[in-house]
Length: 445
Image (cartoon, rainbow, N blue to C red; front, side, top):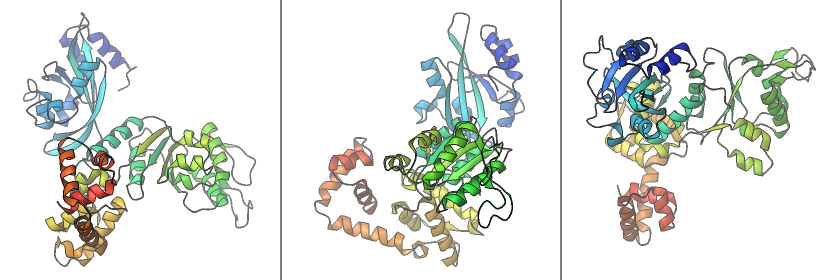
């Protein structure tokens, strides 16, 4: 709902009037809205909210706590291990927004929760208006396609993505190879106002400057050897939609100036032409390289870097979301031919949990695809996993046992863990690598 719309103006007026008028305004809104008091108790909800919860009336909702309805908790979210938008809004006196996993009719869904305090004539907060926006392109459960996860690092990335998606801001998606940057880019387009317009991908890896320029901006007939006909560029094809530049760090330096000019003006020329053309695109780019390092070595233009990285999003490594491993395994198996009939036994899952996955989710998919081919039954065991997985765990165990003062390190790590230190902080305190701490913990699990 646009906040400068008539409904929002009516709602602002209703804040100083009786709750009956509040109910009328909330009922007129098309998105799911619910009115909550200071004690987390639901006082009113509109038809869209009832439909979301598959309720025909307010019976069974009014009088219950919001955290009971959405999560099944016995205590508010901030006392149950999650951020609470009502608590945040009460403390700040302003609108607060969080991403939560809510359960509707037995199904877990990601939703954006936006809470706005409503004040009475005395200026005191009387109610909170909660707006719910389901996030359709992400799932906290295994699925056949799209982004899947529940880990805090994944949810943090999801929160950033859904905040920037409705805007026109240029986004830079960063992360190691195999983390799913392409899926993030697609989800960002699908969640944007341009979702019904074209989504065009340009792979910038290893292409010479002339070829990339021709791919981006097109060329005229006879512009160079082999240009036998006029070609429309992908920028032209993406007009009105999203242009995704994959591995933007590989764009040749000579072409970067032309890309910068296009991003600033929307103007470009086909190769071999003097005619100025215009295209309206939103740029989303991705890279596994550190662009700041490329700027320092004069391999990437400083001005272009700041133009493409207006809103950076970091896609976490698989080792940073290991709690998602069972969920990812189930989801990836569903995406393989007949893979949804297979499951991992506990020993195989334990081996995968101990493995560092240098190839991230792409490597996990390859491992599972190989295991499905090798498995004659329906249960994947350690025998179906590749040697690099089983060999790594065995080698890590031997390295730990062979290292000096192992008992002392284990005691130190255990004590620091109990004190709440992270793995990175433990590594810094013990003056060892984070990988060493990881191996000790996993090998002696």
